Amino acid sequence: MDGWSVMAPSELEKTEKITINLGLVDLGQIDLLVREGFYSNRTDFIRTAIRNQLASRAGAVEQSVARRTLVLGHEHFGRDRLERLRATREMVEIRVIGLVTIGQEVSPELALATIAAVEVLGAFRASAAVKAVLAPRTT
Image (cartoon, rainbow, N blue to C red; front, side, top):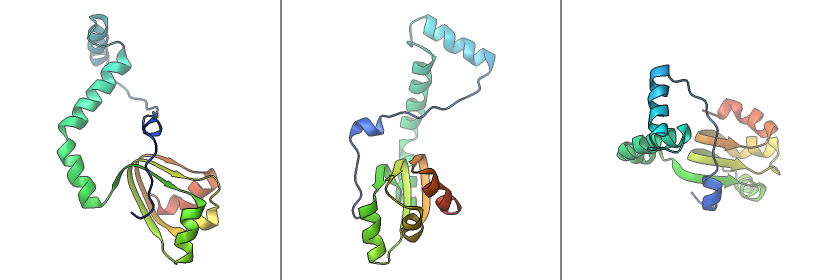
């Protein structure tokens, strides 16, 4: 995509908090592995398990990214970028695995005029007003 930018690794390394429910037996087994020194804590175990699963499915992720024309990483849309799109009467379809940010200086009107669709598998950060006007275009 023309004009897309990749944030510094520190931006991509930011975390998003999730909550999961585990059965007591599974939780007990995790606690045992932590106690035995295999992992430093529950979070370490869970992150390791998730990374192992993602690594084992990397081929499927790559195929899906290519098939669905998704950007992998971070994409930022600021006012200048969207104003250039509006000047050429173009609209963008945002499809990202990772992080999408829309600058705080972007008005809801500019977002509506330039963003046709938003598909984010990860995190979508924008002002509440921009998120609200884009909600019908977000999957």
